[in-house]
Length: 197
Image 1 (cartoon, rainbow, N blue to C red):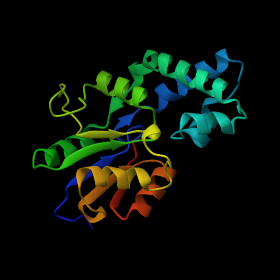
Image 2: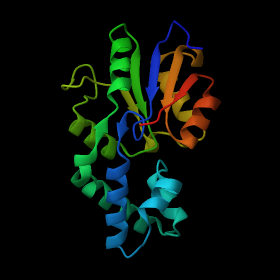
Image 3: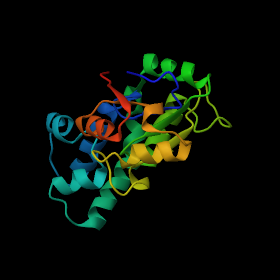
Image 4: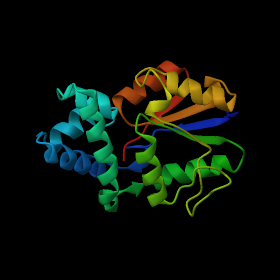
C-alpha cells in the first residue's frame, strides 16, 4: 500500500520511463557486429537487456577491460542513431508530474550510463533539473550505474536516492520493469510496481 506522504518517486529509465529496447538492441548489435561478435536480437533482449554494459560484455566472454570500454564508448556514440524508436511512457510520466507539482521529488535510478540516459532524455524533451526544464518537464535527480558500487539487484542505488532526498523507504515509491530492478526494489523496503510498456 502506498503511503499518502510520498516524498520520492523513483523511476528506472530503460523499459520503464521510456521504451528504449529497440534502440539499445540495435546499437549493441551494430557495435558488436563491427567488432566481429555475433549475438541475436532475441538473445540480447531475453538475457541481457537492462544489464550494465561491462557486465553484459563480460558475460559474452569479452574479458579485456580496455576492449569492453572501447565497445561501451562506441555504443554510446551510435546509440542516438536509433532514437527514432524511442517512446516516452506517457501515462507514467504524467502520473509523476502530477505528484511533482505537489512537491514530490522524481528521480531516475538506472544501471545505464549517464551519457546514454541524458542523450535519450534530451531527445524525449525531459530536463535534468527544475532550473532546466524542457517541453516534457524535468526530473529532480539521476543516479546511474557508475554512481553506485553495487548495482541492481542490490538495493544500494535506491537507498542512495532516498538518502540524497532525505526520506525513508516508507516515503518512497519505485517503478521498475526488469527482474533485477524489481528484486532491488523489493529489497529496498519501498513500495514498488512493475511496469510493462
